[in-house]
Image (cartoon, rainbow, N blue to C red; front, top):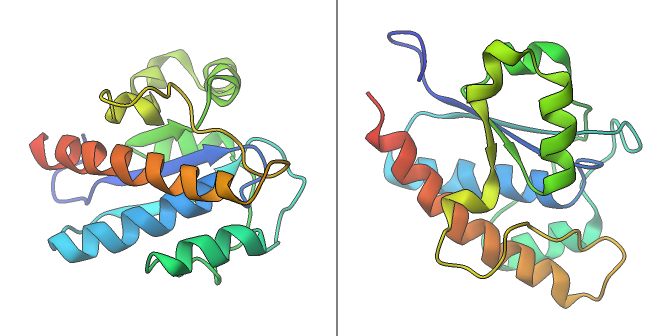
Length: 160
């Protein structure tokens, strides 16, 4: 997983880094802390539409209702060094995975994951983008991410 003595690291990827990926970052940060796990967590977007912006206010509100404060996070775009730096580079949907496979050096493809692969019991293969949809889309994102992050935590704990 990681170099000896180095904590595991996770990077979540969505389109603009203002809805899904910062929500995933907030959930993993809180759950890892609750479990006493030392995990480096970050998020980024495949596109630079919102670089420097706070998460979407609807994401912030929905996350806060469940105890996740993501208000201080700021959007950034994924960079080539992220593929080297992080142990888990996790795409929130199929399009993100296609872009990551295209931009990630082939020898680092083993670090690329699809978020919902960590929640095989759900009917969803992707975490849908709530940006243009109804308000309950943010609740669905939280439901899916909470389930997948529990699976991701099991994977992190199982690795040497």
